[in-house]
Image (cartoon, rainbow, N blue to C red; front, side, top):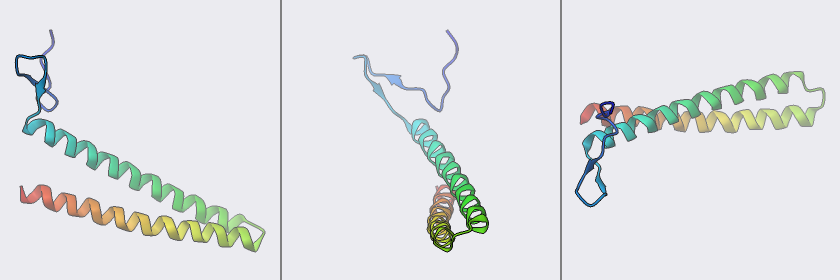
Length: 94
């Protein structure tokens, strides 16, 4: 049997149920951070794509829609960047 990864290991309590420890919490936080970073990258890609589509759109209404979408994604990206920064500060304090 291969050794258990300490970050995801669950200790048995004798009744077939597990108890999650500190290592599980750390791993969960790391996954959350990776998820937030992946989502931020996706938002940046969407911003770039909306900006590109706005530039090549021939109709004013389409340009306006793509600019509004890009603006909305920028707001979301800023909020997510703040959440990531706050999460990093929290990790440093612990």
